[in-house]
Image (cartoon, rainbow, N blue to C red; front, side, top):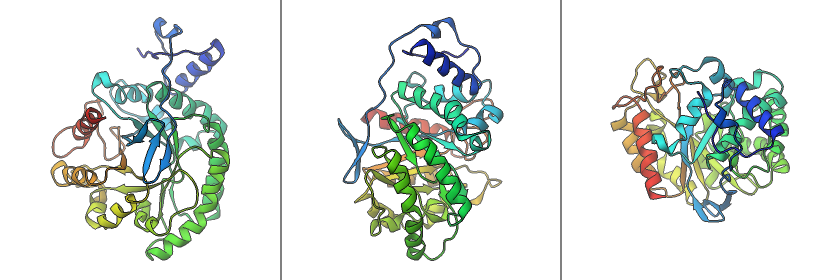
Length: 350
């Protein structure tokens, strides 16, 4: 039976909160969870200070996890007896050895489940509030994998951010991710980046017009792997962060020095990294703890301002950290136990 912890809300808001949990598959709550208790304050607002993410207490490095899309999780997740929200509770619970200070939530399938207003109410607001109570930052990710140069992409992105950006602009622990993985066109290096920047700058301006103080993460063509070009051709705007996605094949082919050079001037966020040593999985994600995870960890140690969210805290979305019975996957083939231990090590240094 699931319990909501430390909730301090009026009866009206509490009904809305419980309705949101029900929308995520939580229909039973203990009598203890009906008590009005003191709510934890969410983490402090982040801003960009030179190459760092910072809040009023100083520099902040975010390290955490990706979940699955919330609607998809409600319908299809296989984590033993746990639903989406129970899994979110587990992977943010220090009492169970999990220490992320950020969770990235991809919104993809949810966007086909109804109006964007319904998605905000059922699949965004309950998660944002829960993670705030856990004193955890949250990334709202427009999780599209598509061409970035079409009218359809432009329409979808604008519809999403015109609704979402103002809805969470007052939540200090929220970050936005503009566009998960712009795909094509790519292949012409800096020329593609310049064209991407010309296309995406109005999108950046749009989000900032609604949420000027919310940090915004910006990807790039070729599945967010053209990040190195931001060094000399950055976007315009305040509190901008550059993302990169790094799987074993990318780690072998990236110009790692050029990527590190971006972090000399700007916050760098690896919003996806992961691996599984399974030849039946897509080639780019095939790797092991010894041959990929440990070298990646050593590389991250050379970039003091690098932030990351590992992909993915699930059993079906690959690379997966869990088995379908909810058991954490361990050993050289899997990333689950390694990621949990990595987060625990970082937590000790905070």
